[in-house]
Length: 356
Image 1 (cartoon, helix red, strand yellow):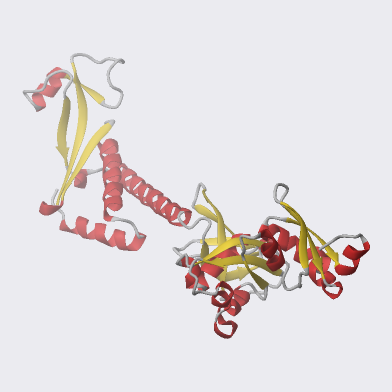
Image 2 (tube, one colour; image 1 turned 90 degrees about the vertical axis):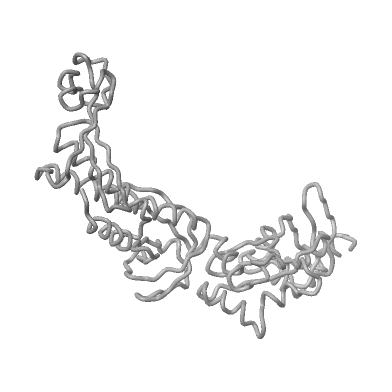
């Protein structure tokens, strides 16, 4: 069958569905095969496209046998040798006899099967492509748009005609989005479901902070500055240890940006969550001192490298600052630097006879 219109339709479907040309051609091949099987009551058909000639070739296939047998290849409908010879005099038992057919002659039910299988194949490819696209974004940050809100969820448009839900338990306490707002979310998981892929997102995941730092601070993405440790009390405060791999770059200054411009962007993206930056150090005493900022540390003693534990001595008026509200500062410092830190004030240490 010659049809320029068919190949034009292929290009239109490629554009409409966002598929590759190979995928659309294969979907049409599957559809024509299904229609052929229905039209001619056979188990196998072959479809070939000759685009240079705008030609569609469809063949019904039958297995030539001396006599009908349940042992024969079940992928093919059987045809007796005598009958096969009437179609092709050179046919012999074991051959696959092909007869060219015209899709224009398909019955109503054959056309129905053609359309059904074609659409099924196109949807399968769309699902596959969507899944692969979002799977490649797993453990990455994406930009989404709020399209609906209810008591327990934000519904987000994440692109490619796909939506997902951000549970409010996965949102930050200060998040107060409205329909139309754009929001940064972290993709925690992507699963293939019966209908469409499901993308799970979060704003409380610690890695969202890392991805924001990579976005707004080019030196991190380029490897000039490295994030060595981080911890997060989502919605309230994060603590991030950074070091520079280039002597001339100040890691804290680069992260903060001119007049705080860079860190401000990150804080705004996190609905006001504070970001404590500290300079990473290979020396454990300096590391612990820096991790406990903004509190001042007089000394770090009782360092046990095997247990990764130490005692930090702080000025009396910095004890509460070092510990933080409900122990937040020391907890985040411990998680960020990987050391167990006990804290005592100068007066407490002197009272216990601790030398520092």
